[in-house]
Image (cartoon, rainbow, N blue to C red):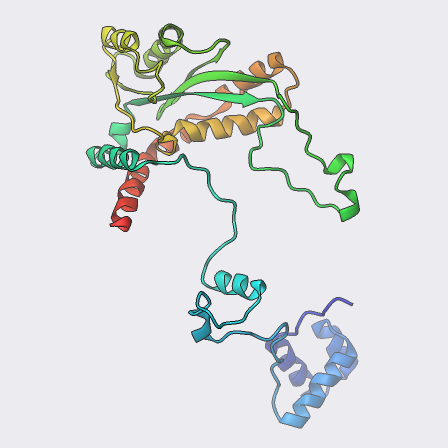
Length: 319
């Protein structure tokens, strides 16, 4: 039998008050929403003690004192894993899936810190002049990287409705896109491996129109990561010829690029459309991309000062 919910002290006091006023126990039970036997027990305890008795703490007795809570890591405190979890929860810890983050070498960390410090005085208006870009791969049926949770009995775990189907080699498409605080730019499906010339063709066909559409003749700063095709001499010459200023970028730092958040949202939107072929996937990608509103892009750009502060704070905490 499942345990009943403990009655509040206020409810018990109301029961006693109603009984003292001469109301029958049946009416009192109906008024507070409990059984007549519960009313009788409370009244009996009240007459025995002369006061409303607060119920004793239910559940397993506490196995550790406050002092022992601080010594759980030390030898000699014999507690089970449930007690450890309870104490961690009391201290504000939560059990959650670890966030993914690229491994950083000491050199990477120094570069990230220097990059953040050089731009820590930038305002949101400064970041509004930056066009962020990146490539990403979207797979059919695997847009929900967070996993799928279902309610089922142990005997039903392999029922059709309780499964998340996967494929060993899912169909996928590589895409390139760009964004700024003004909204999304152009997006394209890349049907071949990306070398320097392919990348130049992408910039010429999709970056340049995006800049013209979002900024007109205003100067901008272009961001891309340190992939070898991005840093080729021919790419550098192309950007200089078009008078586009390129931003230096710290290695292994996708967390600093707001377009990564845009990819996450895009993949969720595409996944909901349920494409089953590459043609459907390409259509879903383009439709979803143009459905992302400018306000969301602006919110990502506004997060840039906070991202830099986090990098600087992490270094300060380690010192």
